[in-house]
Length: 409
Image (cartoon, rainbow, N blue to C red; front, side, top):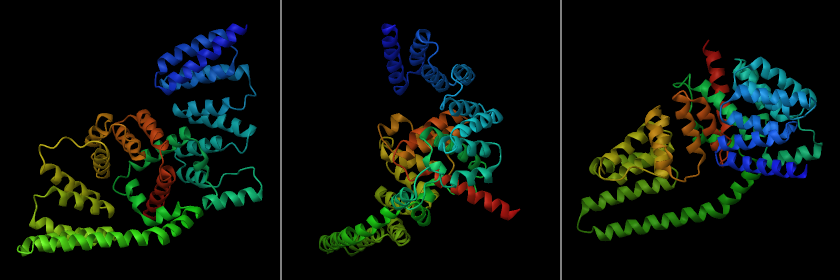
């Protein structure tokens, strides 16, 4: 008996390690061996079902969990996982039934509440689903704990913010599927991130206090240092091109543009860079600077056009890679060129870069290509990185779009 228990535990640990490594087929074989040793173990059945789901064998995963429920009908976790499997198969009535069963046992289960709202979204009850996801979580905490939580976050956490990565990736897939039906009316995530009001809405009280302290202590010093550097470079240009007035004027205009960009005046910087780029259209650096200031203004099509010009001016340069490949792929997604973006955002081009935008835009490319499961996996990878609350931003955009469509009708 002891030997069977030890071998089962060893097989389970091995299977969990293989799942993390992406070796789901080998993990499934190990779990099948473990279940043969302990067929009545509900935990093993749950791991078995989740591994089958990773291999997209959802009907088999449902059968395994249903059998586990018959073994232990009062298990607190099985109903929500079973509801999630039914949701992934688009069997929404069954998913809602098991979700209700999970909520009956635990009314404050945020994952069950989030899935219930997600089912409403998938069923076309968009407004109802949005309202549920944006409502504060009914946490069973005291008034003092609630006040401390508000102080730390700036507001009470919404339901979707308390959901785990697996649930949020499903939310993001559902939201982006809806938004892709209205490409001309939808603001992209990059535009939302650039939007000052959207950034302030997701800023906590602690962040605002730290931001004010940062402004007082560091920003003034940083601005002063930048001004000194610009002045020194201007003086250097005057001395270096003392006998070349046209070249001196050109260098001074470039420095004026850089100063405007440093001061946070991208529109003025764009105007100045455009003037000097007309005088020297063959300098790739100017096109790159124009790309940067256009991006800062949300002019993604112009930014992409300048990037292509810079690439055309260096035909023998190696393909963009790393951070540059990410930005290039992001710009391609902004203008709807998802097929080209998918070739730019490959692991061979981006390497070991860790950025939420990488998974997010890979997910959009997969969604456009008709691969929702691959898109959900990419969205999950994005949500595992530090990100500006992607799901809340996109759900807010979904609500804005829905409200605008209703106003037009």
